[in-house]
Length: 258
Ligand code: NAD
View (cartoon, rainbow, N blue to C red):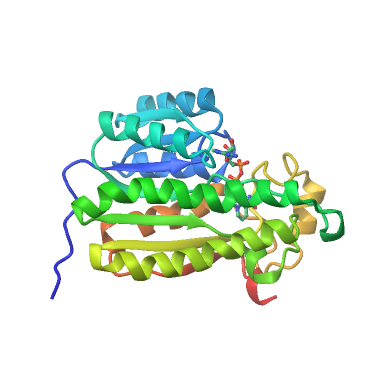
């Protein structure tokens, strides 16, 4: 029977889209650092990525690095991961959070708009994952989590429309098929599908009125906090989660059955 490879003494998590101050990625970076992970922040906004990395290093005393890269650009992704691998402990975790929303209704959607959503939400996940996997396969150890959305399951209904829902549904198929190929390498691949979370992605900071609107269908009567999603992601990256793979975790206050 194959044995699970133990975690090394020091290990890094790469987080894409962790540059925005009020985002799920930033909350996850904090959470993982608190749990002792070295953290690599990758974001299209390189200045933000570096600032987050510095703040986290100061707050938790772990190794960090901030790198600027557009996840849909293969050479930028390769250069960014090269830099992470050169300066940081082995990469054990990858969290694909970089994403954009799209409130365009279907009959107004353009091919360019459609391609942009897929380029960042899906192609970006493919490019970063494939590049990071090289080292994980060499070491026979890895934990990959990609962010889908309740929008994939319910067909929108929060803010974003068809292109976004389709790109986030693609993340679920990607996760399951990749998990099938990576199991033999002791690499788990999972997805997390949040409901409405209090970040700025849905057209800016949520007002009280919008929060109330988005909470209406949830059983808990509120939107979620980035820290709550971060806790779930951190568990799926942890040594304890080694037997969980090809799963999609709902985190939406019960919205999935309402
Ligand atoms: P956010 O806007 O705070 O974070 C998104 C981050 O991605 C930003 O830092 C942005 O700079 C970065 N980014 C955008 N395009 C990029 C690119 N091409 N390359 C690299 N980085 C890029 O939003 P968030 O709510 O924290 O979203 C994080 C993830 O969670 C997204 O994939 C989003 O679709 C998903 N999600 C969010 C919610 C929600 O309600 N907030 C619900 C379900 C899923």
